[in-house]
Image 1 (tube, rainbow, N blue to C red):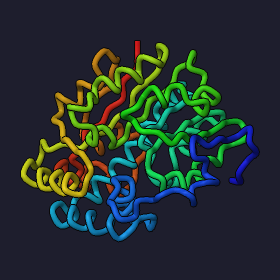
Image 2 (image 1 turned 60 degrees about the horizontal axis):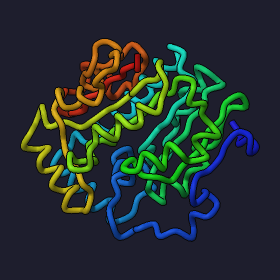
Image 3 (image 1 turned 90 degrees about the vertical axis):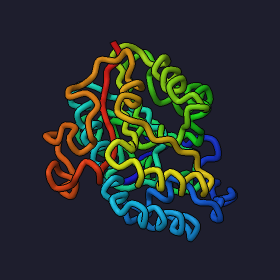
Image 4 (image 1 turned 180 degrees about the horizontal axis):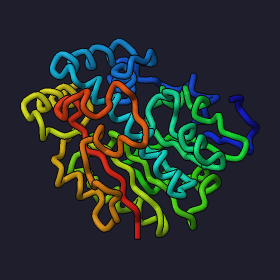
Length: 288
């Protein structure tokens, strides 16, 4: 698949062509680059690898968790596309890893449109990989932070790509555990969902301490000491993000057990890993 013209994609503030002028903060670990390390990627720096290695030592299952999260994103996207969703707002995109969300969506619905959002300059540096859309569809990238939903919702890259009078899937994969309670995570999700019409959906995954509290406390301590806020949440707390939404069965579930029939990475298929290794609650709900 080749890149298409400007009608097919758009970049956000600090467009992809100007990333080289940005401070990539190579001396400070970033969650997106640590996640890239867990997935076996190469777009990370020594500070990221050092912090990530500490996490792997504390919790060897973190790589399984990362793969399970990515597989959930694929399955949730595929299910939503099959249920008629044609637009996505994906916040906390991370460094591109094929297949990206738009590739999964457009494999089902070639006219699908996706707006990606992240706040890591390294993700911006690779944003062109997120902008290779089908001819019928469209993708865009916004450099912004989930803590500032108004900037996201008013960005021309969003309003010029998505039709907010039609259903949109808000995708928040492995993101909200980096938003502690003092930053109003539930209010942020409510604000984003309030901007979307009836028939829209929320797809969310969230790390949890429910299956191994002591180990996950060590993981959180590593992130916090590296400068990244983090807060784990139990199942009931994760269900709180879906308040007022009509849940897709079975509701909030351990990620690898959520709709395995939608197709999954064989390495995280149900029965091949433990719930404790995955330690990730996930679900999808529709706005009435």
